[in-house]
Amino acid sequence: ARGGAAGPDLAGRHVVVSAGGTREPLDPVRYLGNRSSGKQGYALARTAAARGARVTLIEANTGLPDPAGVDVVHVGTAVQLREAVLKAAADADAVVMAAAVADFRPAAYAAGKIKKKDGQEPAPVALVRNPDILAEISAERARPDQVVVGFAAETDDVLANGREKLRRKGCDLLVVNEVGERKTFGAEENEAVVLAADGAETPVPYGPKEILADTVWDLVALRLAAPAD
Ligand code: CTP
Ligand code: CA
Image 1 (spheres, protein in one colour):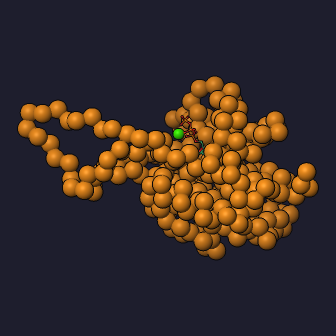
Image 2: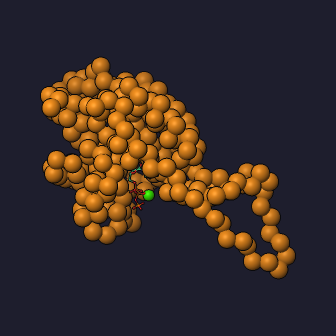
Image 3: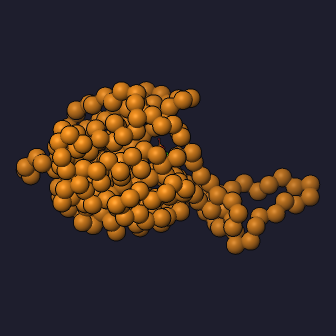
């Protein structure tokens, strides 16, 4: 049942969506980043609001305008994103991690701009792991009935890698995209499969990111409606 036709099926629910890509600073002018546009996360926020949910959108470096009727929290780094997600998730019915979180950050931040030295090759950049936010919220649910959704972009063995990632993260749903030339990064359209921890597989044909977003909310709404066991 789509919200547009079926009415506000997420009314009374609080949902948290992360969007964009984190940037991990190296010095005041440089960072380690990724190519996430944030468009899928914004589509998730807009469609959830249209279906009646109270929406907290945690945004990292998208440059996109705040959607109407949505509470937006702006963050930069993975550590800031984690803090904002954990805070918002405390009373959330669902958490959707659409943001691309940098796996690593520079081990050290240089307070002054890093300069070249004549005739010298650059020193290697040491990196450390960032916290895995999706795994953490999946393992430590703020509420036992909270639905947790992850996203994964894969280039090879998309379904097998997706299944393994769903299990490893411990989330309820994992939206798996195949990354290609015209797909996913910065595109208006998207094609995906939604894998569920219960074994279900929902293919979503190539189309607008709103269609994928509404499919995710359909699957979330089903799980919210299911009686607790
Ligand atoms: N994610 C997260 N915290 C991280 C890394 C990823 O919460 N430090 C979330 C992303 O928001 C996404 C999901 O985990 O919803 C999958 O991200 P992905 O990068 O595909 O997973 P990784 O475990 O980092 O695997 P890979 O080594 O393939 O990058
Ligand atoms: Ca990753």
